Amino acid sequence: MPTGSSPLRTITTMSPALASAPGGCCFTGVKHAGTPVGRIEELGGIQTYISDPPASATTQTVILFLSDIWGSLFLNNKLIQDYFASCGASRFSAYMLWIETDMDGGIRLSCPWARLFLWRRPPGRDLATWPLTALKPAVDAVPAWLEAAKAKYGTEKTKYCAVGYCFGAPFVMDLCSDGTVVAGALAHPAFLDETHFEKLDRPLLLSCAEDDHLFPLASRRRAEDIMVTRKCTYYFQIFSGITHGFAVRGNPDVEQERWAKEQSAKGIVEWFDRFTV
Image 1 (cartoon, rainbow, N blue to C red):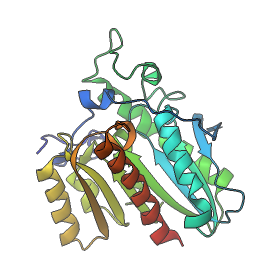
Image 2 (image 1 turned 90 degrees about the vertical axis):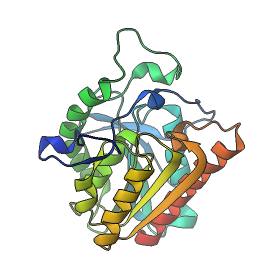
Image 3 (image 1 turned 135 degrees about the vertical axis):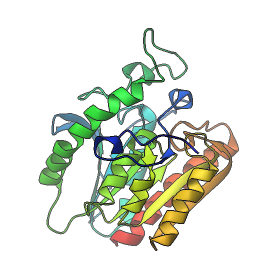
Image 4 (image 1 turned 45 degrees about the horizontal axis):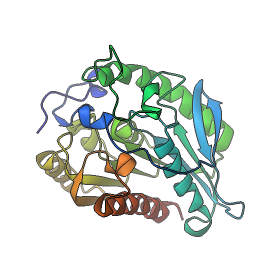
């Protein structure tokens, strides 16, 4: 089990870590193919990718997408958000807009070189310490971004959900503890500690890799123990033969990785559907 405490939580408290900081595996993967259909707007000073549902959709659900360290403007992440939005007509019954925070540009939370070369280490960049450096600016920037998103796209009837990949996981857990969202989802999370689960107050889906040294088996089971004790509403997806990062950067040419990635996204849509319809 990881040692120490989550950097996000060290701002206010100390707690045993369950999911550690992003590591070398988070800077590798496969860039996918496709044409994004969303648009980019500035919300709260952050470049934000927004993907609309089909025109026939009539939902009032907003999904907050908190990306991994590659950033929300990375092609793979745009395509995931477009998939979520495309489910609006059949999965939801109110107007739906898919919004996510830019972990790449406005607050410099991600690595711009990553959009081109997933396998290339940028000169002079210490990948072991960079995620820790990037976390504090993200923590500071998210509140203004969230308020701007709610002001522009929310109404009194809007239901918010949040999904976080790797770096984005602790932000989702915070939103699931302060009443902002009706449900949350995580995929191969980082930066989590026991306090996140002790404060969890909303339904949570965890989409996990069998082999994930950032969130290993012992940590998953400890997280589950806490949720069982607190009688939380939760659901685990555990994909065998899969490693950290599969839901964003898995290889679509490898059947097991492609299937896990697709099932993860499908499961998240269905999870949010359960609490918003």
